Length: 186
Image (cartoon, rainbow, N blue to C red; front, top):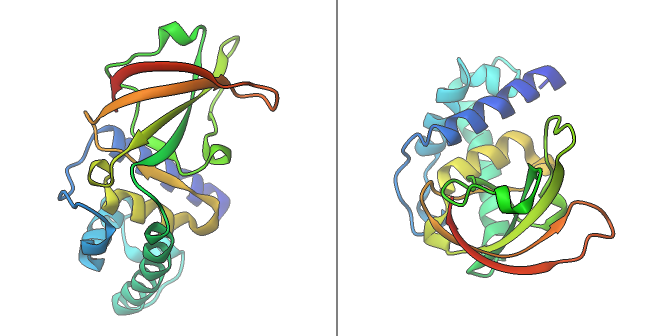
């Protein structure tokens, strides 16, 4: 996949998540099927050929999806729950955080919490919260992971999920965690 195609797809995946396209609720990744992931990918790309930037029979794409799903399901099985997740936001002040809509896209590790876009004079903050396994949109998460492989480490939290932001820090190497314990929603 070309860099430009990857950026466009990444944007479409995030727009889809922000619109909160309904995916079936799963208590975990174990029950997610290839058909469900294909449906998400087809809502983002015109065809599965566009997904991989390769023309091949649909069955070949499905086998690739299934193989990648196995890889990520193995990774998810090593996660402990509630999972500690991280999110980067650009704000003029941490007190300006919209606690009613903190956001869906979180990182599995601190390094994955990256702010995208220009934030002018705002400060980038990394938020830290714990999320239950049942509150993660596993279909969306798997679709993102298999699209970007090693480059993406995002977890999609369902819209409206109650969250407690346990701590925050500035997005600098010397940023120290500040306990916060503010309640909000994804």
